[in-house]
Length: 157
Image (cartoon, rainbow, N blue to C red; front, side):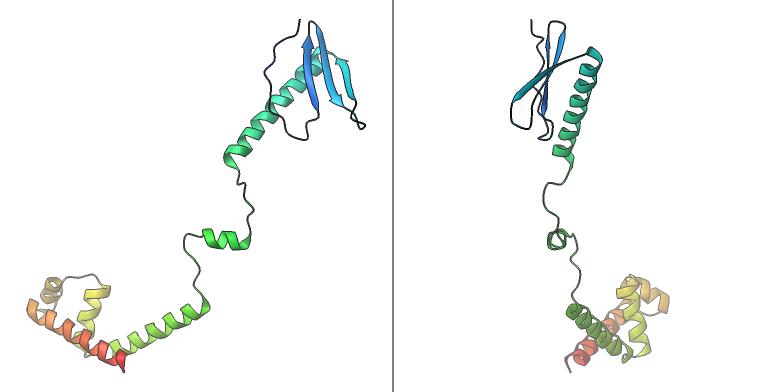
C-alpha cells in the first residue's frame, strides 16, 4: 500500500520524486534520454532526501516571501530613492541663491541683522528678542519687517 505523502512544490533543478510503497523506498527520475528510472533505496537515504526536499521547500518559500524579484538597475534604484540626489545645476543655483541671500543679510544694520538671525535661525520669538535687547515687542517686529524688505530689494536688483 502506498504511503500518502503530500505533494511538494519543487525547484526546477530538483529532478527526482520520492515514493514509499509498503517497506520499499523508491527514488524516481528521468534520465538524459527522458526515460523514467526507478531505484530502490534504503530508509536512511530516503529520509535524508525527504529532509532535503523539506529544506528546499522552506528555502523556496523564503525566496517567494522575502527576496526582491525585480531586476535592480541603477535607474530603478534611482527612481525608488526616498530623496532623489540633487543635480549639479540645482546645487550651483542653490549655492548662488545662498550667496546672494548672505550678501543681502550682510548689508543690513547690526541690529536688523542680529534680530533677523535670532528670529529665523535662532528660533526665538519677537517677545524673547525684545526682552533680550531691552526694547519693545513692536520695535523688534518693525526691525525684522524692515530687514525683510531690504533683503527683498537687494535680491531683486
